[in-house]
Each structure stands twice: as structure tokens, then as C-alpha cells.
Length: 99
Image 1 (tube, rainbow, N blue to C red):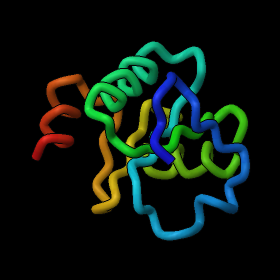
Image 2 (cartoon, rainbow, N blue to C red; image 1 turned 30 degrees about the vertical axis):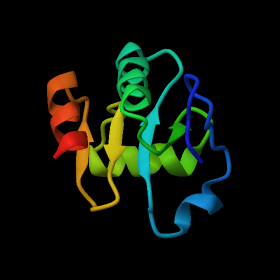
Image 3 (tube, rainbow, N blue to C red; image 1 turned 60 degrees about the horizontal axis):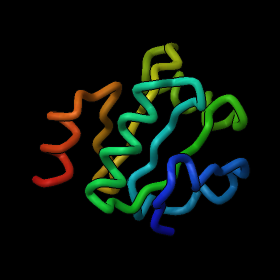
Image 4 (tube, helix red, strand yellow; image 1 turned 90 degrees about the vertical axis):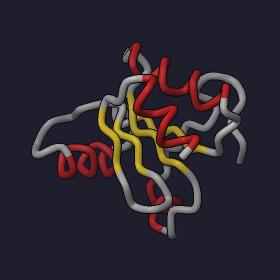
């Protein structure tokens, strides 16, 4: 699903997340300004992604805490190649998106 407006892909069912990741996964919260910034940049690049609100999905929150050594650092962005960016700057995210 191609996301266009901000936070259009809220996933509340973790079961759909257990398949192989074929698109960018963005873990965040609604109140996080860095999450909104990341989503805007992904939208500008017309990137395929899913946005998961960790405050509405306990399994997603546990995953974020696990990959961030116990911290709920958002945005946490997981790419199809398995790489993860945590709270990236625009420059770092843009570099990842454009290769």
C-alpha cells in the first residue's frame, strides 16, 4: 500500500507484520515531530512504507524496545534489506532512500 497522507497506514494488527518485510516499516507515535518529519520525507520520495503507532500496538512497542536496547526510540525505520535507522536526520534518510 502506497502511503500518501500523513499516517494513513496505521496498523493495529501485529499479525500482518509477521510476514516477510517487503516495504519500509516506520515505527512511531502520533505526538512525535521526528516521526512526522520522516513520513513527510518518505512521501516526498514516494516510498512504499507502513506506519505503526507503537502506542496502539504492544508487540510493535516491544520490538522497538528490543532493537533500541530497552528504549522506545522513534522513529525506528526498518528497511526490506534488514537495515534499521533510528531517529535519522533528513540527510541520512535521504541517502538511504536514494542509494
